Figure 1: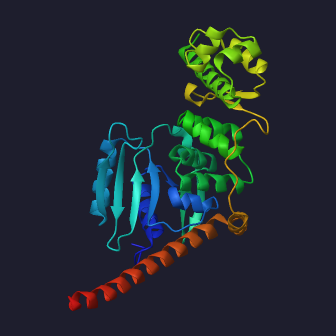
Figure 2: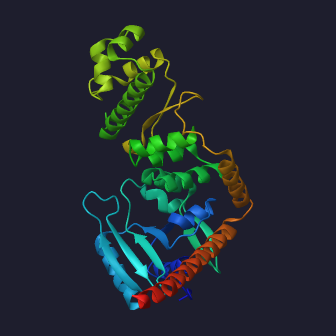
Figure 3: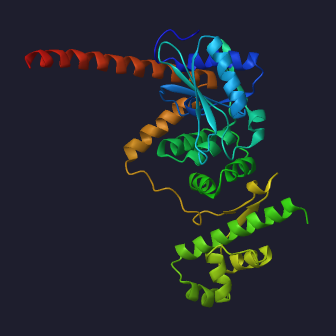
Length: 183
Length: 156
């Protein structure tokens, strides 16, 4: 385990990624870590990643994490929740990783558009910029939109067609939020 | 026509109708006024405003968009869910309210500029350091609160 104390959820995420790699589970780092990669650097108590797994497979994966000594809880979303299920993975220092088992509206090709970013002697696959902005437009809280806005401002290259397509998949409100940011 | 083509055209119709309806709302035109000004049958306009566009052709909606002076971009994708109609052109797209404080805005710009100079790895390290610092601050605050609470408890 890499984390030595509280406030090191990004290091716990690296341990989680080691397990995902061994289990050959495709993943993408999202949330505050992805926001940092795209320029919105801020503290966060937890780290988030997304995997594309059914609830059953996520449940099986939770057993693997338990055997490795992680504290794991499988949470299922309500029928109207855009997140079908989530593994909440913790360590003895109260660091926390949320492993989302999917997201309604997400382009399945998103996992093929990740970017490898070196971090603390390892490498993590971070969600692509366009997919990140789309997800933030879908979430649409003030902090999410600020993260999306910064990711747009710091972009040296942006595939606007792809951005609009993947955002539109989340519904018209997400597309409207994006258009506001692009204006 | 394949079902995905039909669904894509339907998605474009719905999006374009929505953009036309919003445009008329922004211009503060009633349906009757808009129908007269743009020479569009009022029942057709009513269908557009209420999103009942199943029997309206995409071509008709494009003609109405042109007639109302609405510049639009239509985009298709690999699945119908990715198809959409968007406004184009400066001054047409509603924008976010400008920041209330120029000082706050300049501070934000400076932070973004600083982040721009870092590599993604450096940004992740900065995020980790910030998280650790905030965690330490949180722990210190809790310890201090605990110390303050204890004497008060004895006094009672």
